[in-house]
Image (cartoon, rainbow, N blue to C red; front, side, top):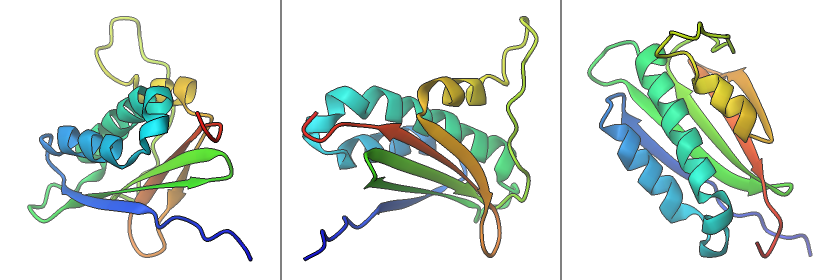
Length: 137
């Protein structure tokens, strides 16, 4: 019999800065206890960076704007997709040394095992990141 996959965890949050803390907490709580010491900090940082970018750059500024998070395990990775209504594609840039922003995707690049940007089938964009893990910690 094939192994039955886990149902992905899914959340929708208002496109507001207060959602970042709530999203980080939701992701941490849904991670299996045995993996929290190994993946918790990195997943928390990735969640914060990607959700902040989605709110700042991907939301249209309408009151009903939502950002979506989906997290699931597959192929030795925990995958996190952060989606917003924008059709823009985030790009990795090298900021000036004096710049106080534009470092989020540099952090994603250095922490994630893999990452990509994909258009959504109907509207919006998803940034998908993966962190590798070993079964049993």
